[in-house]
Image (cartoon, rainbow, N blue to C red; front, side):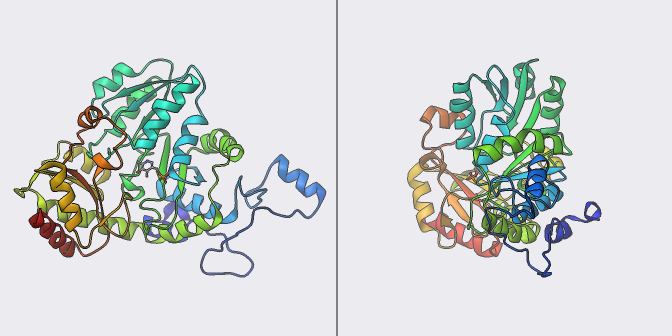
Length: 393
Ligand SMILES: *Cc1c(COP(=O)(O)O)cnc(C)c1O
């Protein structure tokens, strides 16, 4: 059965629900509702819906369910709930389990919208949040308290690619009974073993590697059946973060090729990082797959690869960074990541523009820093493009 399958088999076959027509490709059930054979059947389904019984697309839908079962099989989670975006997943994971008076400990280096939820929104509802340097285990230990309900982190930080020791943080968090919630976008679902390493809840923006082709927004919350059905689902089904069936279908097709794409992207990122390391125009090439990265050993033990994103620090600050971006021919300027197309971002003036210069400096985001998300193009072509753009600087 599906538990014995290897990753690439799961990504093609897990979760399939074939209709009476025996279609090969997953069907798109583009329907908001479902009809009942009788009034009694409707009543029974509202009391308890069975495996193949649906009520309303905000609660669940057969195409969405296929996506949830396939990504749960990949992650090794008991269950999953799909959401309209990655942020709907992060929001639901936190808000479904927290209440006023609770305490949360979070890594400080977070995706901007995650930081907004933790810093600006949760605190407005009486949740206390302590931020720590995620790589400092002593800081986690000092911040955790008996009333700490949740711990939140991204195992690989954006855009400086620091690696957090998930197993060590999970052990500390479980010591005080806290739920460990991991946003694992940068590690990718292919290299993630977050549940095995101690995470209780894993969230993804499916907009990134899972779609991987720049088409749709989506997200998913994964965890124990108890957490997904008793905590996340009641919150999500009543607050409206549901994924559309069409999106689920696009993402099911994305999952089929996820392992092939992400492994090609990671190999490309490794080749690019090795080719650019030591370039005199760069003060730094940041990539966990390089032996010189401060947490290289941890990255290899935790993910088995360096990931698909690297950052370059250009000598010459913002002016040099802008000349570099503008000279690229293959790599496109955008702010997505995990896409089949290689993408370059200048965090200081885009994704992290909202922060003050001091806050950016504290996160290691200088004016010369550029983030590269490596796609599935030929790595030799990418290296040539990056080198000619450095020449143009
Ligand atoms: C993109 C991203 C999100 C948000 O996902 P959306 O699908 O854009 O809502 C959250 N966390 C991380 C780490 C991300 O990269």
